[in-house]
Structures are given as structure tokens and as C-alpha cells.
Image 1 (spheres, helix red, strand yellow):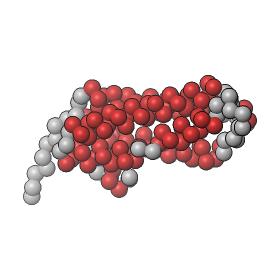
Image 2 (cartoon, helix red, strand yellow; image 1 turned 120 degrees about the vertical axis):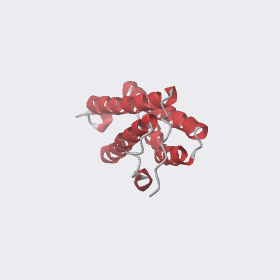
Image 3 (tube, one colour; image 1 turned 45 degrees about the vertical axis):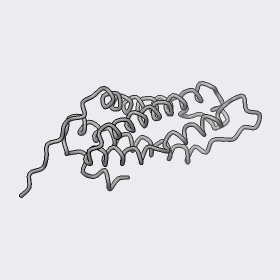
Image 4 (spheres, helix red, strand yellow; image 1 turned 90 degrees about the horizontal axis):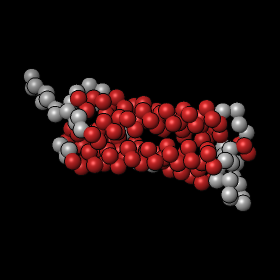
Length: 155
């Protein structure tokens, strides 16, 4: 019977900030969804909605940046594998928000109505990813292997 190696916790500022970003992204998405609840698609052409989406996208971009740094810095197979899997799942997530924000710009002469069902589906996918990633990051930050087992099957 082989003994599992103990992993050095990734309890650094970048990991702590990554976990904070996950919490912030969930909060900002919830805030945005509450703000647009009950609105018709033609009522969404406001710069405030556009700015909310871009703020969420900025937080996602920062999360991707920090996790890329952590994956490169901690190039041990255990950390790299899990951080890379997270990065792979997050790499395109800001695109939906950026594209939607572009179409919600009230200055555009030719407006495009937002398909709420498609957009809601994409936002739910982002939330699911963040809710899955957050406990994995918390496990890595304290050096526990639990919480990271299923990540390769998820992404």
C-alpha cells in the first residue's frame, strides 16, 4: 500500500484572491440577474447593464490571469493538472458576457434583441463552473486532495 504524498498548501495571495474573485463573480451575476428580472429585452439597452456585464467579465479575466500564474509557478504535476483543468473550463467564459455587453450598448444604431433563454443558459453555466471551482481552489489552498478528485471528469 503506497502512502499518498502530502501536498504543500497554495496559501498565497493569488490563491486567496482567486477564491475572493469566485465569490465576487457569483455575487455580481446574482446582482445583475436581479436587476434585469422582469425586464423585456428592449428594456436592457442601458449602459448600467452593459457595465455590470463588463465588470463580471473583468473579474473572470483576473481569475484566469491569477490561475495561469499559479499553474506556471507551481509546475508540480498535482497542482498543474488541477489548475490547468480549471483554466480550460474558464478560458472562454468571459466571451458570452463581453458579446452581450456589446449588444446592450445603447449607443448602437442597430440594436439586437437579447435571447434571454440562451443568455440565461450561458450565465447558469458560468455559475456552475464557479460553484464547482471554488471548493477545488479551497482544497488546493490548504493542500487537501479531497475536493479535487472529480475535476478531470468535470471539464
